[in-house]
Image (cartoon, rainbow, N blue to C red; front, side):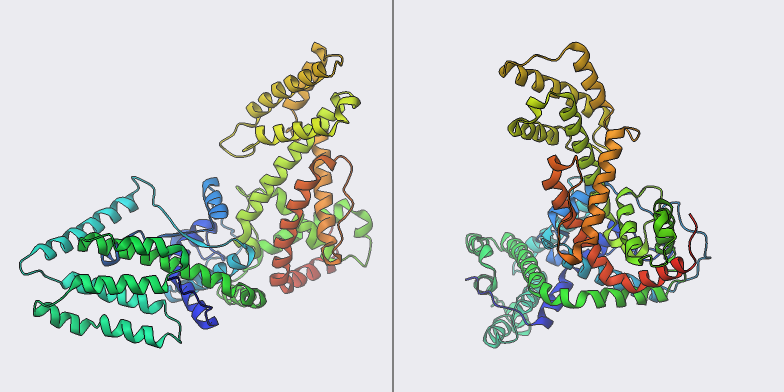
Amino acid sequence: MGNWSPFPTQVLVNLLYISEAYWSRYIYSKASVIMPFEHDKSQPAEESSEEPSTAGTSNSVDVSEESLRKRIRQGTPSPHRGNTPQASPPRFVSVDELMDAAKGVTNMALAHEIVIDRDFKIKPMELPQGSLERTVRDIVHKAFWDCLETQFSEDPPVYDHAIILLGEIKEALLSFLLPGHTRLKDQINEVLDLELIKQEAENGALDISKLANFTIGMMGTLCAPARDKEVRNLRDIKEPVPLFRAIFAVLDLMKLDMANFAISSIRPQLMQQSVEYERKKFQDLSEKQPNSLELATNWLQESANDFLAKDSAAASSSSLSPSSVLNYAYIRLLTWDHEHKLFPETLVMDQIRFQEMKLEVSQLTLLGTLLLIIQNSASPGITSHTAFMDRMKSLLKLLLEGVGTLSVNTEEALATVAEKVCVELSSYLSQHGATPFSMEREESLKGQIQTASSPSNQIYRLIESRIQTFLLSYLSAANQRSIPVLPGGLSQIQKELEEMAVKFVRLVNYNKMVFSPYYESILSSILNKQVQP
C-alpha cells in the first residue's frame, strides 16, 4: 500500500486545479481583487454548487493553517470599502474580461502563495456549526443518501444513483494514475466498465460488494502511506450506503494529498519561473485597467517626499539612489494605515502579511520599551543578572500576547503588566537581600509602564525608530549577506528582531524581483523632477 511516485511536471500542474474553484473564494476574501475593477459592483459570484453525488464530505478546502486561519481571524478590513480612488472615471468591463481577470488573479495568487509560504498546503475545512452553508450542505447530502438508501431497499434494488457514484469513483481513481500506470488503468476500466455495470443492473446481476472491494483495494494501492489506516477501515463497513459515503470521504482526502504532494514537487520549478509569471500576469491585468499603478505611484511619491525631507543631504545630492527611496518605502509599509488607506496594487497580495508584520513590530517595540524601562528603573545590580532579565522578558511576552488586536485592551494589559512587574521585582529584591522599592518609586515604575505604548512616549519612539533603522539597514545589506550593527537599546530583543528581519527581507526581495521594472520607471520619473518636501 502507499505506492507514491514522483509526478511529471505537467501532471503536477494539472493536479493544482483540484483546489482552483475553492482558491478563488479565498482570494476574494483575502484581498478584494488585485486590480480595482469596480469591485463592489462586479465581483463574480463564488462557486458554491456541490454535487450531492460526491457528498461524502465537504469539498471545501482551506490553506496553510498557520497563515490563513490567523489572517481570517484578524478580520482584515477591505481597502476598497468607501475609499475608491476618484482620479480616473470607471470604465465598463465585459463579463468575459472580468472572468479572465479573475482567473488571472487566482492563478497568480496561487503561484505567489506557493512560492512565498514554504508551509503552504491545502487542508480540509470544517464549515462552522450552524452556518447557512453547512446547513444547506447537510440537507442536500442527507436527501441524496436517503434517496440512495431507498433505491437499495426496493425490490428489486434500483441502482441508478449507485451507477453514477461508481462513475465518479472511476474518474477519481483514474485521476490518481501516472502516465506509466497502464496496467492499473486497464484494471480500473475493465472492472468499472459503466456500460457493463448498467447491463448487470438491468439483469439483476450487479454485485455492489465486489465493486466496492475492488475500489478499496485500488485506493490502497494509490493512496499515500498516511491514508493506509483509513483505507483499511473501509473493509469493516458492510452496509452499502455508509460504505459509499466513507469511500468518498477517503477519496477527498486522497485528492488533497495528491494536490499537496504536487505543490511541494513543483515548488522548485515554480520558484524559477514565478517572477516572470507574476510580472506577466500583472501586466495582462494592468492593460485592462487604466491608471493601474496609481496607488503604487502615490506610495512611492509620498515615500520620496518623506525621505528627502528627512535627509537634506540626499535631497541636494545628484547621485540619490532610487533603491534607497524604495527601501525606505517598504519600511513605511510597517506603519501603514490599512483601515483608511488603499494599499499599493503591486503589494496587495501580501497586504495581510504586511499587516501581521506591522502588528509584530508594534508588539516588539512595546516589549523593548518595557524592558528598557525596567532596566532604567531597577538598580544595575539587578538588571545585570541575565537570568532575571530573561525571566522578565518571558513574562512580558506572555502578558503582551494579543496586544494591538481588537480582542485585547492595551491599557488593561499594561495595567496588569505594571502590577506583575512590581511583584516580581519586589520578590527578587527580597530574595537577594536588596533594599525594597519605596512606594514612590513603585508608583513611578507603574506609571511609566502604563504609558509605555503612548505615541508620545519618548522611550517608545526611540525604540520604534531604532527598530526601523535596523530593518532598513538589514534590507540595504541583504545583497551583501552581512548583518548590520544592532542599535543600542535593542539587545534584549535581538533574537526576535533578527527573525522578523529575515521574513521581512525575504518578502520585500521577492516583491522587488517581480515589480522592479515598474518601480524603477516610477522612481526615475519622481526623482528626475527633484521632488520638493
